Image (cartoon, rainbow, N blue to C red; front, side, top):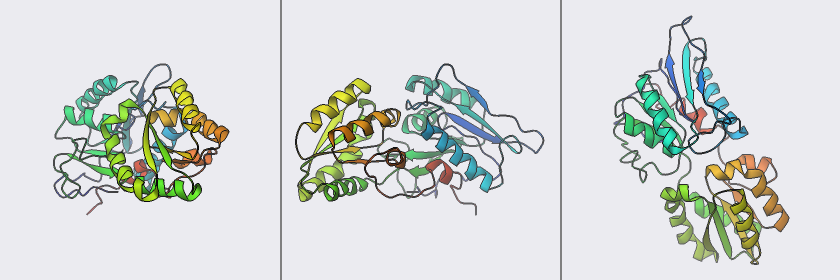
Length: 295
């Protein structure tokens, strides 16, 4: 879902900087472009905890680059892209400050923690967010129609999608009476965004929504083992970095216990997960390249 840009500064078509995992872009005249600068050590992770070398991270970066190239911008030729990948939220703030100090033409933020960190550092540099759950509730914008300030972008899902997830579970397993929403405490800030719809729709489907908090692989295994021991249960894996990192484990456990599951990303299904809602094939990062539209 796109956020209107009525009161957001227009982004000049010839300028880009990206901060999405974290990262940034700025245009250079042809022949003066610079290679992307990646600063990280060990196994770099985005601010949300997804490794830089994870397939989902690579897919989003590839989608972003394709989106730029479709509009005539090629990294290393006429645009410079500075990427940053932070291991923690605190590090995201440090890297946000670093990127803002570079005075980019525009920044792309690929998670709520990154967008919030960037907003704290600058109220003037145009920032496009992609894959944000609840930009209003997170305090990033004032409204969808008129976001205000220097931010605009794309929401990951509308809140009503939660009801569709439950309906899909019911279709897969008509006898289902309990749905566990798998998430981490770090996502608690926008958990209510999804759970409001679940609590509203659940009774009409005869489903009780249950929140399952996990922190790591051990928690995930214990939680799913325990949850699956109750008959007529299903799992909803909502947007969360831990779910992406441990996707293989989650898929294996749901298959082992033969419990129906709905996932927020198609990559889960491609890896053997049971189902997910249909959504556009273009990644949020790809679509963010055209936002706001050129006028």
